[in-house]
Length: 424
Ligand SMILES: *Cc1c(COP(=O)(O)O)cnc(C)c1O
Image (cartoon, rainbow, N blue to C red; front, side, top):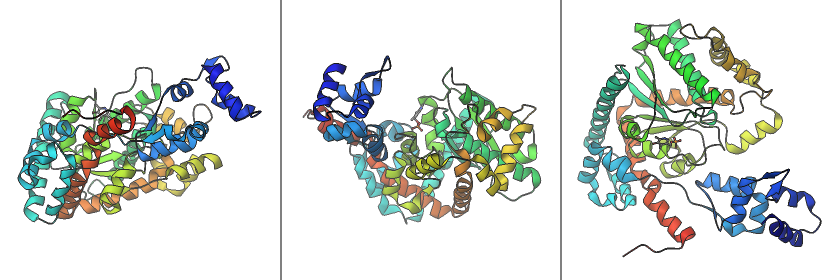
């Protein structure tokens, strides 16, 4: 296969050895699995528009030049009959009442729910349903984890595999700075918040396990302080799985989708949370870009570098101390890692952020987005105080989630990749 393919390339690009070497299937005694997949497939799909563009214009640029039609983009979707109809019976009943049951088989019909965006009765019902879901989830957490979370607090959720690019560490750094703020002024008047992390780490992924450990020890130290834990609670839920997600998504009020721009191919957790009425705080990454297109910038909390800006910072050189010097909160939070939490030292994470373990500091640039992340969270907190406006934005998110149903994605695969017709 390699010989045949390189032969074809030689016909097309005579003498262009650099290109042919780059595109070869075998090189340096190794088989290049990604190249082999592209050459062996009749289509290559990007799972969000951003991902499709990166694949076509960057990762597989050379291949797109010879077979441009091979590269397509079909944005992922979720099974809405599972993630809405089955897991959120309260919201499903409200939708049935307002727009009828057709959205179950035709998710775009969810758009009809927009008619109710200024209906105070419906907005109030939405808030009550969310509260009941929070109570149900809190009961489950009490049983399985032995922590009594307060359903009156704001439920903020980051649920996804533990990975550096997803930046649970950015979330944790902000929570450290929030904890420090409350230590300095324990009587500060803030609305109680509960931060849920749900994640698994791959068995051999050491850094991921270090981050889990940090979150758990931060949580442990806060739990030992009765005054602070009333306002700021951090809960790490182990063994994250689909069953847990089915209880958690309907209870979430804020969805954390904070990967470094350009790293998350699509994300589907973002869609599950959106269809259950959570507002999103996120970067312009993966399907978040299209979620923004759907709801408009007023109905999502965006922050951070864009994918092209990330590339530029890389080219110029990422310097953690630069960000550290510009934001005293960030400096204090990062320095606090050396002292650690609940008698556990986290200098290793300090080292990872500031100088790196192999000479490259934090390849996912948590510190570059920290200040803007805090700004976006301050906006969330402010909006939350206007309950009816929050509920309205929640309703708009639900109504605009139809595009992210798997029904649409599967239909596009059938049309554009599989070339099959639906059965009558
Ligand atoms: C949806 C889901 C995921 C994917 O979440 P992302 O936020 O898109 O990474 C992972 N694990 C479980 C159990 C899920 O239900």
